[in-house]
Image (cartoon, one colour):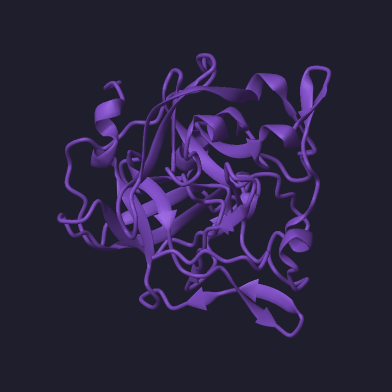
Length: 291
């Protein structure tokens, strides 16, 4: 199960009580996280990334005319990283990820949005990513920032149970398409999967080249060797071939380890460690109209 750490080494989750909690992740084999502009990306996944969002505390957004100013703390500062870690200088304003599934419906992890009070304190921000090198991400267009109108359904079971939240946004999203869910085709061990989200609250990362490790029908999740971190919680996990959503990234291994006085990414072999848990689509699909 996921490890909740109070060490400031993983992306922090915003909790109703005001306490900060953390969800853990890890790198399997080579680090496959890529910015949107990276030439290694499948163009299909770059398009799908437009329908993913970062969750930011409402109190961390400052209005500036038609835009909002974001916190500018860097990944390196937030996590006490060693200076050779990837994305060291990139900003980390968010705490979880989400994805659009209807004109005004968004899905995230249940531990990211626990109740109505917490939802009221969160904004869902689209297009927070480097679609070109050097892009200024200190502010975002107000048109890309949405609020929570209500929680349609939320489940957070103990241990390794179901973990999802379906959110009704304050208005319809008209400039991007909802993602398609795999409602019928069985996912198999060895199938390729890709995750798009905000590891450690970073700008959008596309992480591919992962595979399904286990898929026990008696459990509400499958396990894959996805390179994910805290902040990826709530990310859409796609079938790499079809581009359909297979589930929500919810749990995983420990993110970081110390190298002297600074931290580096925890690494496992492609087949090592516990793997990352993904809540299956069929756990929450009944709450979402068919497109």
